[in-house]
Length: 319
Image 1 (cartoon, rainbow, N blue to C red):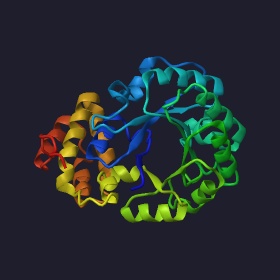
Image 2 (image 1 turned 180 degrees about the horizontal axis):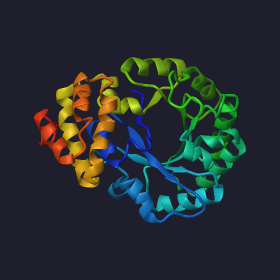
Image 3 (image 1 turned 90 degrees about the horizontal axis):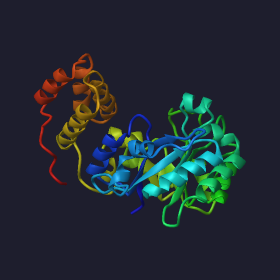
């Protein structure tokens, strides 16, 4: 069985969502949201806040290893932050060369660096020098900024810098998240380097998983928004007969309890609605619940509506 990795999704896969998705299961490892590195070495609390799994042996409560992702453009400060991060013994370190967010791009982070292969090399090499043996170093990139002409050059620079594996999202920065993903272009990158490549982008179903592997030539696949739209997707890919609304409802209850504990009541509903918007891609019941909750703002009112919808309070049974 090839590996399935949970993607770092800024604003979507926070520690609570990672707890839920890895609790449902099917992932070999995952990557947390990025830690933004500028011209400083960040305090320990920043790493622990972004990746609280570091307090648990760098694993989610279900035991899934979680790697920490760094995003920045200065090799010196990226190295300094890596030096501090590895004191927490992360399951791995990843470098973000793929984020397309406008704010990140304007501040020369993420995918903004894909026009500078030499800088990619220098960042990876500087971070690699600070990571002891036994802690994997990976990088995640897109195919380019506006086109794919430098994709191979970027991948080769990352490999030469010392990354052990490369995750390639099959879109450019300009593509954003618009379908389709260019899976065949991932194959072009894979064929040009010797380190393993993990394919990523637009995998929503088991059929998509089969097709991305065929077109990219990659055995291993990273799941992003498709994992939120179908939280049982990783287990379906593994051939398990799982899922359905009844199986999901207990996990919705866990998620909502976690949101209520962590988020001010005035903002709590937005988190749940954000997830329901993705879930409704596959679940008609999620669409109905989303429409019911959409105009509701008070968390207490959402509590009552969820209870009426049969969202239970007990923990899910082990599958």
